[in-house]
Image (cartoon, rainbow, N blue to C red; front, top):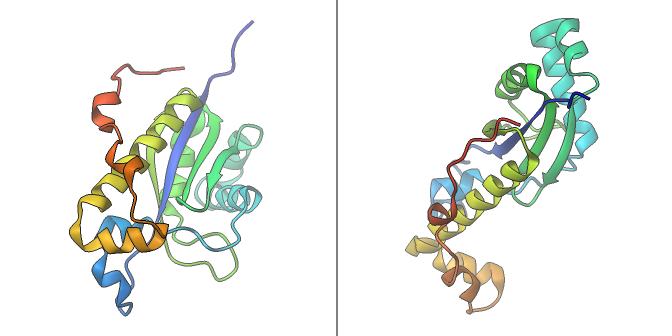
Amino acid sequence: MVRIKERYLLVHILYPPVENKDKNALLPLPIVQHQPTVEKLTPQLLTKAIKAEVSSLFGDFGVGSLEGNLSVKYMSLATSTFILRCGRANYQMLWAALTMMDHVPVKDGRPCTFKVVRVSGTIRKAEEEAIRQARTLILAAKSNRSTAGFFTAMSGQEDNSMLENAVDPIDEMDTDEDDG
């Protein structure tokens, strides 16, 4: 029996900085770009928008290629991150469509950029990369002195022992490739 080969794409939604907001002046650029997605974005809307973009770029061939395989396996509006599953032969087409998308696929959606961070043969490796990048972003934000007040105000407490005891994600990273 032959196993169906799939690829999992870890994607971040990045937002451009807004010039007129004073609270964003205190935050570093990576924090401003990794804002939560507050729109009512659902996996169904995201899949529909991706298929529409594939249709505009590759026509009926592209939509037919992705039809049975495309699905959103994980979506977090708080971290603006999602994981897509598609067939191994078609992940470049999906990546191109995500690159060309320029707004959140909801009514009057904000302008944004969809950045493919990792392509993996297993969902486990994509999830590990999402956790590693979130941890790195939190540690970088914590080390920035201008955001220290921001994070204590957000958490409502002075104890950040979880972040202080966090393991360096680069030490935890294994280097084996996963071809699925």
